[in-house]
Length: 168
Image (tube, rainbow, N blue to C red):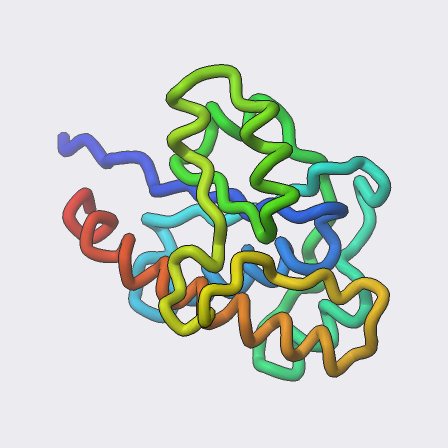
């Protein structure tokens, strides 16, 4: 009997877990699925705050994802907890504010080492560090944010894919 290694686990973190992080969760999962690695990658998301726990993603998030061929309807918001450090290999912040909060919540050097900023993976980001929060903007901004997240998720996935394949 062959031991099957556990899947690579990544959690994307934004403020309320209804706009940016659900987009990243869905896109990253789709990337894994598109190259036959759906069983080797677990992509989730969470928020630093608890305002929207249990709610669906923002209707504009769902619409933007659908417009680009992705389904975000199953998402339910949740708050990031200490267990997320234990259960994930990578904790990806959508902006520097989330990154700062996650570093404050980290309980060990191991937790700290798991934290990364999404745009840091994307050479096309032009030095930007934060994915802007589209919550108070229009639908066009949601599409722009989705584009930024998709580019960064692709770059992140390209970086991780060889190691994920090697463990499978």
